[in-house]
Length: 108
Image (cartoon, rainbow, N blue to C red; front, side, top):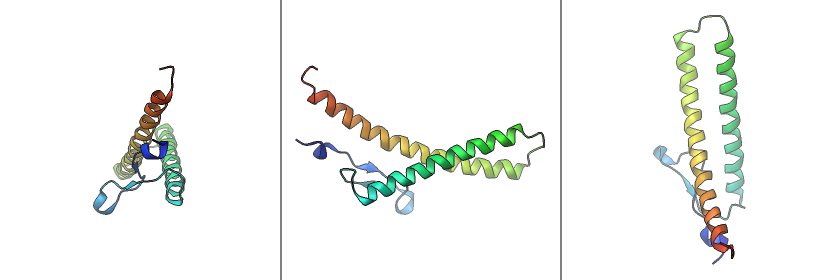
């Protein structure tokens, strides 16, 4: 059995139609896998940027409006959804490769 045969379906970092999860069956080396890697990087950078923006807003002495807070919370909710999807996808792939390494190690 090869590692390719064990590769799980990859949860992509964007939703499919109707907001449902979208999966990719691949060995991780194709164009769509690279596009997903790039999208994950962008999503993680955007989440980090929102955290920096939040820190700046909280340090500012001026009173924040309800509209500003609502907008920031909406964007942070979207970013957290993206980050959770990325963590789920990477965790699922990591678990398979960790299990594969343990099974192929003759000392275990």
